[in-house]
Image 1 (cartoon, rainbow, N blue to C red):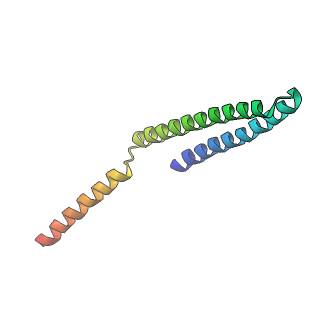
Image 2: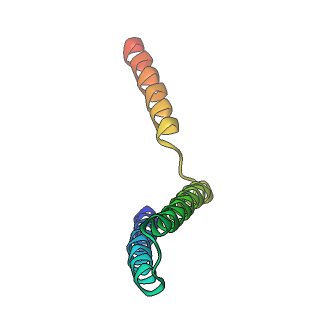
Image 3: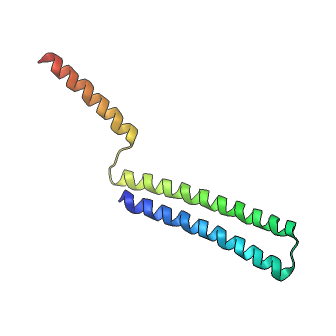
Length: 100
């Protein structure tokens, strides 16, 4: 299940990266067609890059929340919870060994 979620996230991020490349190509095309000055083209490109970064951050946050929700729904525990339980088991095993 985690593998499917990871692949979905990577696909989304890959799509976003591809989109950024397409945006840059579009800007170059618009600059040539509309005779945009270099600085105007750079401003537009910067604005679009910032929007893409914001979207990527939102996608990552949403994916992280979904992974947590699915993990909880499936009854999975976090790495920290697992390590805490593992330490407790080791302590209890040690106590049992001492009594035997």
